[in-house]
Image 1: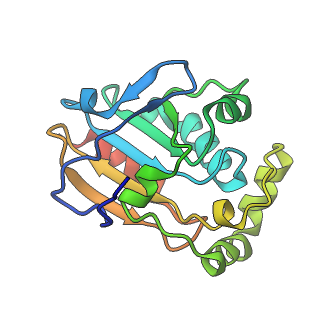
Image 2: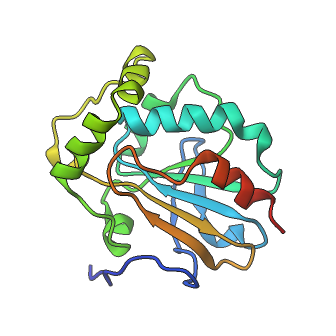
Length: 184
């Protein structure tokens, strides 16, 4: 399968995909038009930084506009992803891309050095994650070195912001995500 390798940019059409979700359904991105969408390319299912980020968003979910759709996209097998996310009331879609095809298509980067920098510069986040039981259950350097990407998509399906994170702990702030969800 050939992939056009390019970064997502402002004004681009939202990425199109249909992938399995932890709720047992197939999440179809084409059905999100008319809503604001927050899309995050996370890392692997047991990633401590990804899981603590999800917990922090869940805590503030009532601050988001009701019509907002959020999608967390993981480099994971759907069964493993369901297992890792079980027992949590996640109010948004969590989907699996086990062949990494969408990550490659949109130039999600891998960098061991930036992975290490994220771990070094965010020890309190890492500690908080491990205290909640989020341990990296992979020895795959490839999975650990994925650098997240946050994408904000408007109601017409156009990208309004694409943040290719500097390291594994970098994301668009939750305050910015909430503000995006509320702006008409």
